[in-house]
Amino acid sequence: MSEFTGEMGAIRIKGSRPSTLNGNVSAEKAFGSFLAAQNFQDPRWPKKATELTKEQRESPAMFERCAHFYASNLQLGRKEDTGLLLGSAKNYLRANARALGVGDAVQISKIVDKLVYFFVLRAIDEGVDVTSSAPPLYLEQLYKVIEALVRVNDAEASFRASVLLLSYDAVGRGGEVASLCWPLVHWSYDIGNCKFTWSEIKTGKQYPVPLLPHRDKPDGDPYLQMGNAAAHGQFNRGGPPEQGESLPLFSQFSAVSGAATKVSDMLKDLATGTSKWPKVPELHGNKKFSSHSIAHGSHCEMSAQGVPPLNQCDLKGHSAGKGVGVSGGAGGAAANASLPGMGSAFWTYHQATPASVAIGKTKMWLLKYIPIPSNVACY
Picture 1 (cartoon, rainbow, N blue to C red):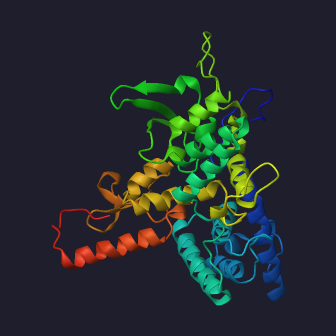
Picture 2: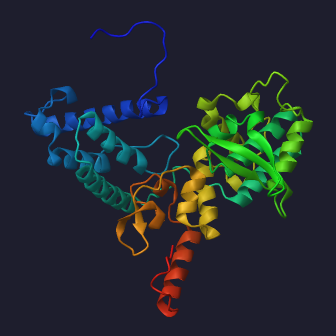
Picture 3: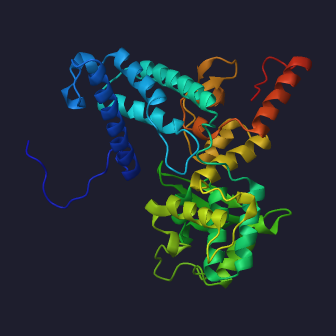
């Protein structure tokens, strides 16, 4: 069959987003470095992935060697980083397996686990924190950021304050804020507050999210910050026009593909200070603050308040995967699961924090000293 021609649109397949494609290119370069090193040790091995035999592509030993190479030799860090990019090493190995058509996902996952183990051993030996690439942005820091923007008191500052606050409500997904338009804003009579129809760009889902006022922090109140932005003319307060066009709330932020970068730049400006923006001391001058910091920080805050992991998955928009069942066994049905599967994206953000570790220790103490019925699920 001949190839299709013409300008008719087509739906992209999964994994074809620009960020994913860029990551695949980086993974391919890393794998090329591994093959060059492998060829140096054993000239019978090719230097290019396209020259690998079927037996070599499917060899677990090759991926084990590749994992060891990534964990031991590659300097996976940018100049301003002090931490090792563990996430990149894991993603590279998985991308290499996909590119070579390796179908045994279980086996690759076991090798990735070994990669993590040796990567952490390397970090311990070098005195490096492997989780330091994107520091969490906690609520108290967010309030200081909003306060600094309010003190600037101009139109762009009011816009940034609203976007950062709403991005925190979206657990770090700036695209949800960028895609928010007036037809998706309603008044909810059952809770007596505004309600957004939140649109998850990555998963293609929509669901209601209430816009709740803050009880005691004006700088954390979305109504006050959006009112301030409206007073500065930052969005169309009159709602959609009579023709029914879908006007975005923030036209400057409506380019969804660049939302994360825009949020990252907002935080970096306040972490370091510029001629336009004040330096927020609570950010400690850390240039690594980014949109990922909002995702990390919001998860940490939810853990500190005892929000169950599956609820965190719902708020973040991540699939829970095959969860850990009520009985403690793996692979329970979603309705009977109390923890997300270890392979799910949830665990990328749910890292060990002082709050979550303290909660874990407290719950273990309760389980040890307070009898709990066997049919009660404990998170």
